[in-house]
Length: 146
Image (cartoon, rainbow, N blue to C red; front, top):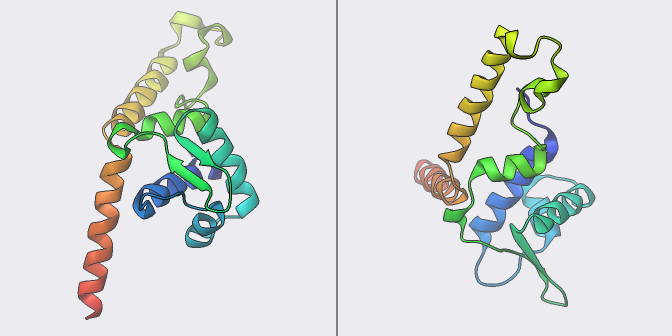
């Protein structure tokens, strides 16, 4: 299964937002620069994340985006489902009626297991887990540079 750039960029933006949050909103422009993402494209992604309740936007001179939930409460599976639409590798997993063979299809069972496996992995990882990994990696890089 291949995730879209929208999903990959959205998760990177959420990680960036969580990592750089210091009590004040973070500008989309700053996230876009750090993550090497088109600012216009990122604005669309942030609107989807806002609509889903993961971020809040603050208007004004000191405006930007903040997380609407604690990073430990945001599972990657939730973000992927909002940004990607489904974890199913094929349509018949979510819509059995689309399969001409219905319950007789042995391959559909495989695709259901694939979706369940992906969901299990993504359910086990929170945004906070990624922030911790990011901090560890940056500390290790700094240690090697000294």
